[in-house]
Length: 363
Image (cartoon, rainbow, N blue to C red):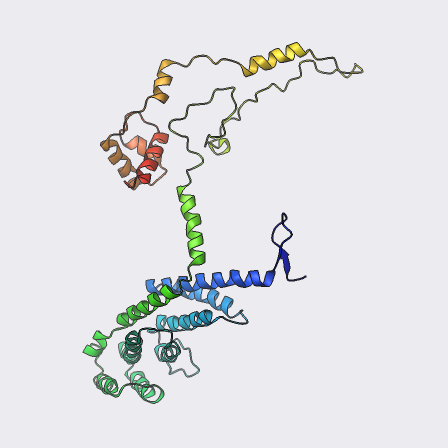
């Protein structure tokens, strides 16, 4: 019973909590993997490193990894080594002379079956060969470049033709050799991006991302609670607040509406008496009728025209509104109203017009 959890208080259905945690964790692992791929593309080393720690903590905690999760773990090992490719002080091997790109070669060999495009696989591998040597020369360490070339000859399947070209580059110590410039480090990064695109197309890993995206879209489309509808009229002083009103009185510091019925007792009970005085039904009924059927005084003519007469928005006003939002930001309707001429319009009207422009895709 320890692994059983009640879904909700309204149902007796029970599920295994370990299975629920496993599914949720798989979504989180996918989201972290997708985020790592994005930071790799953006070359954001700081955020990549932080997210990688989270990813490692979650995936290393799994007892039995699925095949796609193990592949994602291997891909992250590759990405981390390429991200540190130009940092010769970073080590992923017990041998300090093994650079990150040298270590990435063995990881890339493990992903041979994952890369469906054989030409892309060979291209990335050759780029790793070249940049293993090229980065050492770029950092001014010709001795490490020579050691790297020897290591590649012994520990990898370095093509003989490419080995001769790299030997010439190392002997000349030419950082601007055509081989290094043509197959540059940036070329390596872009080729790995192509591999990631193909992998993510087959393994999207974006369930949690899409779910969060829908939440954000709903929040953006939801109208602000403090906004008032342009076509709504002010409620009567003694009438209850209509449920359709979007105004939140606590946010706008408005006074609470008066209650429909008076809370005063018509014939209060006095402590000296032994019982309450009888109420007069006809007077109470008369009081209720007077309060509920009270006819408000007719509003002034200018008030009626102000709320019921709509002015057509001119293209010039739309341009003013767009310029104001661009300058002050969305929601700064009062500032925009002060700076531009909107023909006696209110900030609420500006907000509603902006919502209409967004709805019709004009902004």
